[in-house]
Length: 74
Image (cartoon, rainbow, N blue to C red; front, top):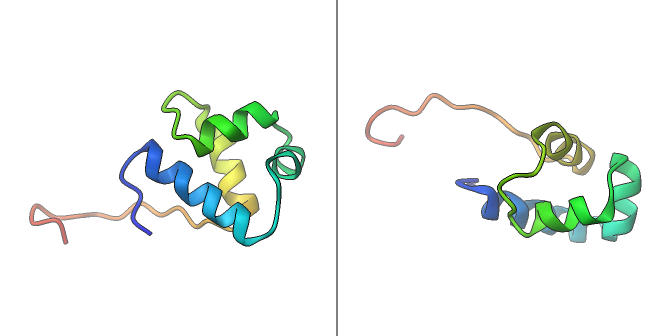
């Protein structure tokens, strides 16, 4: 899945969470965050804290990688 903005990142988080059968409450507890944070993250709120978002991604097994993309987008 290509992540291009906070909305697509949030959609990925939601999809991974649901695939694992976890609720927002369970994910919040595992990530030591509030349920509101998980909701904001999944809804693509652009001002969520990066460190918490990365922790949630790690818990869900979402691999985040920086790629060097040349000018033609490949």
